[in-house]
Image 1 (cartoon, protein in one colour):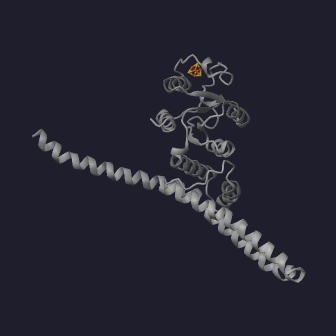
Image 2 (cartoon, helix red, strand yellow):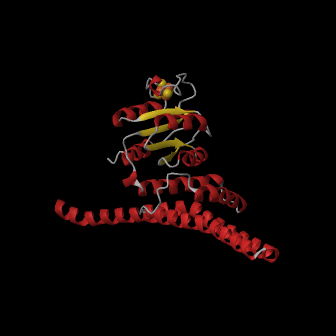
Image 3 (cartoon, helix red, strand yellow):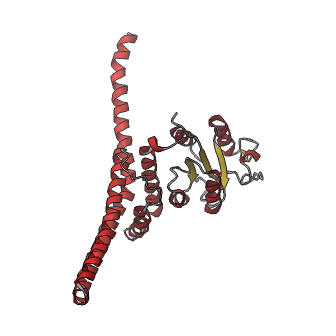
Length: 276
Ligand code: SF4
């Protein structure tokens, strides 16, 4: 009887897990679509502006010098092709998880150029800024995962926002997270324990300046950053080319006060860097 039950239920579990895997894959693609879609639309708006500008200035420049016209045309084409190439590689890497990114070790021109346009565009068409930022964090995480083979997991830095500490606690954590006595009133204690378990370097920061300073001092090979959508968006761009896995915090009491974080997500991010 038990065997019969096993035979009957096993395929159902399999089906359910297949369906949930497909569903989560679809959800993960969809969550990235806001940022990628906004960037593609921004790129084509940029191309249209360039095309119209070239069309308007062409007769005058031709009158001055045909060579100058060719140079301006080539410059404009390059100004389109660089972000076009970058965005194509980012999109393919994020969706298919195959590392196609060129490891140039500098700030991503594509993201720097297209993100402000995408943010403005999203605002104009009524997309919530935080939705765009969440989507950006998802794309960034997908790119970080795709680059796993390139990442050395030896120096992992965990950056925590100051607002994770409960407001009635007077321990000074920005100096040293070990000042936390793990009383259990907030998630910081659990995170310190997690740090000890995996041998992590944990820093609590109260803003972007301190976060940048901690990154410059520690020189991590990977960062697990917990923050709100806004801080993660800027932080990920600032930390580049250091790979960052972003975990968005929960804010049941509103922004910047007594925030929480999903411990499982933080642990998964740590395991990813340490390849466990
Ligand atoms: S767990 Fe640490 S940071 Fe949180 S309230 Fe207790 S001592 Fe303060």
